[in-house]
Length: 171
Length: 233
Image (cartoon, rainbow over all chains, first blue to last red):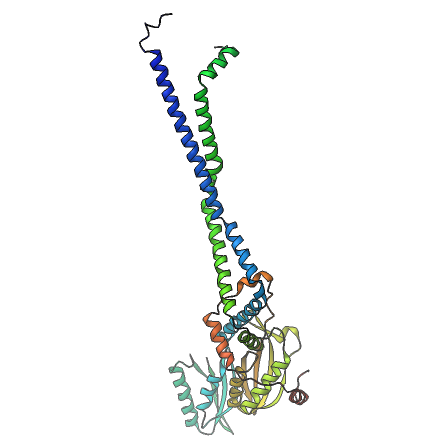
């Protein structure tokens, strides 16, 4: 077989092929190196920034805190109690102020019966003078205007041998 | 078409393409490495970062707990614990309750006619939020002013109480009051990390109870009071 009739020189073709293969080999090893390097980097990042790494630090720190366990328990209990107390103190009813307000105006009337609770205030007053009852009612209406109470209701007004008796509700 | 390759030809072919096979193997190894190590690492990164951030939060809490614990004055803490426990006992402390009633009566000049509480488990306990309490009904001679004065004094006495109702009829005022308590919260060894700075509300509560009337419980007074009252103790 004659080689002279080939349009491409076989020697050149072989050299080009080798050159290409060499290039491909270099590229493939570079890619492998880069991939391996990336894998190592990702492994390192994964370890360094993993939750378990932080957990290890937590465990070490908790170990350091062991001598404080008594103080910590006491602090936790005290803070919890104070937090509970804060809730109670913020929510607890204060009837005394309202009782005093109602009582302070009752100079010429007698409070016969009185109830104050979370639902409101009921009172029964007595006086020989209707004008004293009127004055006291105006005083209570004033308290409503001052927004100490949200409303007042005169349930009944009767007269008997002991004078005038009025039953009131304050909300 | 049937391909008939003899061993000899195959060997020749492999020999000729040896370099190419190496290249293909190396690319394969790269792809393998990428699929096994890099891709899962990248895909799991967000969830791992989430886990890590949570752990970092815990770590910071522990660090904060450490600094709080190191700065804690043990004697002051003892005092605060004592105050908080007196203000909100962990169980039904009748001794403290009777002491508070007696102290409030003394300070407000109220004359206690009698007091009682129901022994029935259904009616004895009230709840404000999640706090159980004991309801006492205290009768005293005098008008509503007397009852208001007594309530004021009771509100600054240990343990913490809340006046539910004040009634007055025929010269006798009745104050219905609930005394709160709350069982201890269990603390585990790992809860050492729960130490924290007090909140504003907690500081405010401590300041308030620090100003409450302190009293010494005198057993003789209780014997006298309980013999005069309708109390079951």
